[in-house]
Image 1 (tube, rainbow, N blue to C red):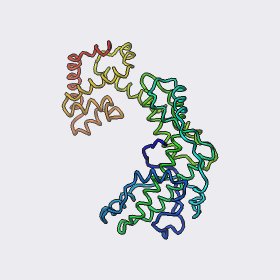
Image 2: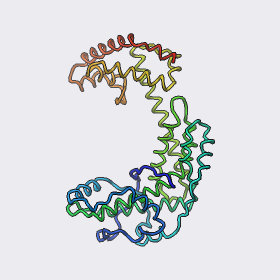
Image 3: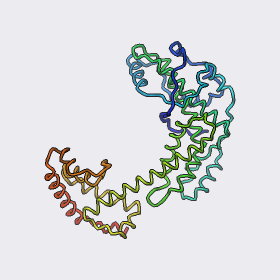
Image 4: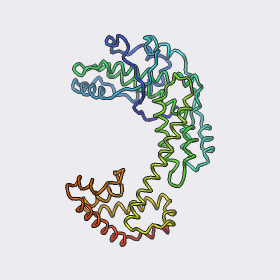
Length: 357
């Protein structure tokens, strides 16, 4: 049985205009949605979708407005203007191979990383043939295009329960096809992110980010350009992993710099030993506790001056003075007072014990 992935909103760079005559499109389930090729996808959708038969008029209006606020993006294709495309697309069998446990076990062994065996279940889907890959991408984007067409016909003043249910089903069916592509390419994520693992970047974190990048790549891939998805996905996942590693390193450097400016004893040797994630998180935790003992303005100034927490850049004294409505000299005094408090608290906290753990 296929592993179900959490639905994610589609993202794309190309959209298509509604089909000619779309304003006359009836709010009813097209016959091709009942074709055998969609049995598995429809069965999964039945377990996810909530019928709207009992919804009140106000509830339908609310859902209509909410749906109109949510864009449905997809990769367009000239063939989508064919009114009989649905029948053609789902007439040809996809013939997906069943999942194999041995594929997951092999992926774990090849990774060379000590990880829970259950992660191998993510890699049990066989690779897709070029023809299967093409069909899945075309079907996924066609289903989203059909949902976008019906969305364009929604009217909050006269909400249509049937049309809302149809849009929900089309999106759910598109997600099913997207998930089959994602599952078949998860081994690619394993093979790429393992190369970025180091003491500061765990395999689990990189794998999670890599899967998100893979889903994003599926939603942006133009299936009609004539090359394999893995070529595009490899670049997306590798670039995402590199960015994750660099951003985490920059965050650590900023925090270490802030601790040094507070005269905490962090020698070069100490910083090397702080590579341990456990020690590093404990040190940051203690710093957070000390910051919480400052008053509101002092805490804000220290975080802004050393780019801690939500602050992504170092703020100048003048910019903080403008934010707080005080003089630049007053901000300097508050910063000095906060630093004195932190030094005193650092003296009470035995930071040296972190170096011996």
